[in-house]
Amino acid sequence: MEREWLFSLIPLTIGVLFLGFGVYGLHRASVLRRTGVIAQGRIVRHDVSRGDEGARYQHPVAAWTTRDGRACEYASRLGRGSVRAGFGVGAMVTVKYDPEDPRRFAIQGWDATTIDLLFTVLGSLFTVGTLGVVLVRLLTL
Image (cartoon, rainbow, N blue to C red; front, side, top):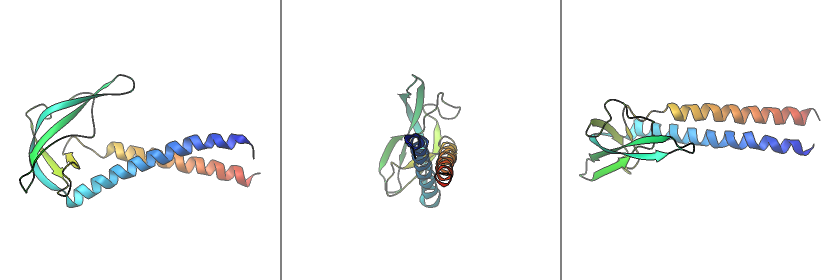
């Protein structure tokens, strides 16, 4: 076999990384769905991050109090280009958090598993497709 098969490592690596990221996000959402505690929170500000192309992403920061009285204030892991209605500063939101570690939380209506599902599907396609091509290449030598 020649060195061209090394190029198949690129989509395979991308696929495995996408798959890992997506599965992690879906698992995290599943755990929150099963064991998360609901609290009423308020959006206190928006943290802004910049993408590689210079795009700005708004991450709402929610503040709430846990059942045991701890004050929490954390930014959502998912940012969007604009703030949707109902998520401006001062808006009341429903937060579902992990009672063991409140940093793991989701703002209902903002944090969605769509991105995680997309990464899982794309990662699966890249991984299975690349492995299929490598397998066919090995069998036809």
